[in-house]
Length: 353
Image 1 (tube, one colour):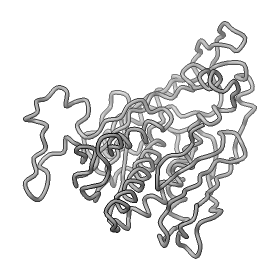
Image 2 (image 1 turned 60 degrees about the horizontal axis):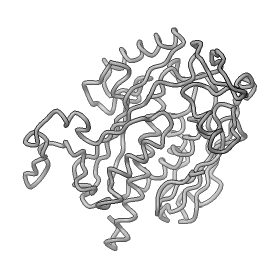
Image 3 (image 1 turned 45 degrees about the vertical axis):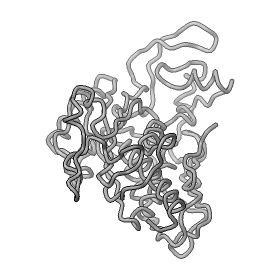
């Protein structure tokens, strides 16, 4: 099973949704980087369940335990192992699903691949796995800070409601994590309505990386945009990725979408900060399409292990919209990708940045 991401900044997650714990091992963190446990915890708190009425009510404190690789507040250069224990797992909630393949979930595909599956909340396919990514992302952000790079994200669409503004300071002021206060209020209403109807909604999460110098990433087979696409598509429930102008550019002419550089800056950013697979010095802008949560209370037709179908209504604690909690995960995967290509660029050019 593939649980690792990266070449020089290597992130390996472990654990299942309703097992004893989830966690991550980060190999390749440069030595001497300040590691603040409070910053890692802050990022985990942004992802954890039960943080608002718009998310799953599973109650997990998600307290991080650093097991190795950090001494006296700085990274040692050795692997950093971090653990988050599961405190509010309720595997009994899924006993009725032991012989059922839930529609929209990975139950059937996992079983067909391995011949065995963990039916308790989806096991490795659960969003619970992403706690390790967020902990690793906190380390990646700390490393990137030394290179002057920042990564921020937010929910820019829920259902048909779209954010018109990009005030990134607004993101942590509303439960949807939207950079547009007015749109956030409408998004929250839509999510609450979906929950009331025992249904769910999808949306779009946008991540912006600032301060990335020109030259990161590789041409041809390891393009930076390809790596970012792989990183974001590896997040549970993501079904599409856009870089810069994305699919909307299909309706325009080249004369409209060619980014002009005036000698100091780009006058537009349809390329999303990447040209030929290499960062060009502009902001890197990526969007991830997040499908509606698959665990819903409405009755649905589901396949059974014995053959045939049955009608189920999934019980338990689930998100009516995953986007607010995907935001810190998407930020983390972008930061992890950038940390990896930064280290690779240092290896190619023999310098720090």
